Image 1 (cartoon, rainbow, N blue to C red):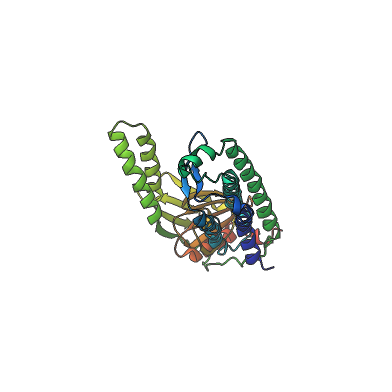
Image 2: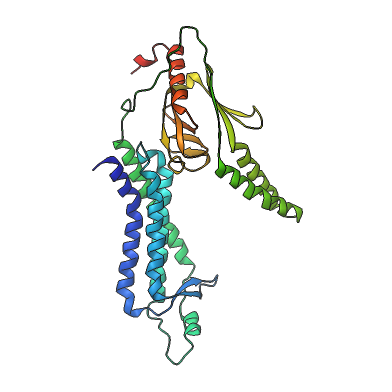
Length: 332
């Protein structure tokens, strides 16, 4: 099976299986289910919300298969194994397990609770249908087991992915002996601007009315705003990323810590989302989808930053690395 197809199957499989289990449960209990179904429960475990039985499978399909599709799209953009996305895969598996158990247990709770024809239907169902809180504990346990399975499958995919030294050839930027070069670009993130403003403004309102929660929201908003636009620089010292409003604090990766550099297109979700992301195999600073610079560090970990003209940055870094460590290409 081709790598992309295999990864797609791994990512989508738990959602399809959860959907199949719920559909099979519904089919098996169909004659024992009331109409409408109790689908929402209060803190006491008693039903307080209902959904038409005929619409139930449509909701289940939209939630489970829709979630599977949303997790599949960024996977198709991956150029490496799923190992770097262990957390995202585990989250998907855990979510499918949680939702699958919740929908199935909801059906069993409704079974055999058809109301007496002479009684008020809703009142009867409220008194008869219940979903005890201990079901939540079981749902979380199922989610944990499924999440562990997701990590295992992602790790196995990483082991079968492209091995060391099989990636694309590292580009070079011709420089004369003793010639000095610097590359720099600014990159912004509309998503982080929106999140920052959407978090800080409500925080300011909460502070104005005396709520302590507002200060935390303002802090989160300011962090997002600080990362919303940065300048990425490559020179003889390595890679540096500084915020738009001040040269410091800055993120710097020294040249001696970089083994090689490459560039490729990357979806923001395939890197874990927007902002500073910590992944299984390294970390990334994600502003938007598109051109991205990928650094393989001497520790074996990877750092990525999304920025325009990443190919030139990668070529300059590789040239500087080769100049700084003439025998780097000979190391096994």
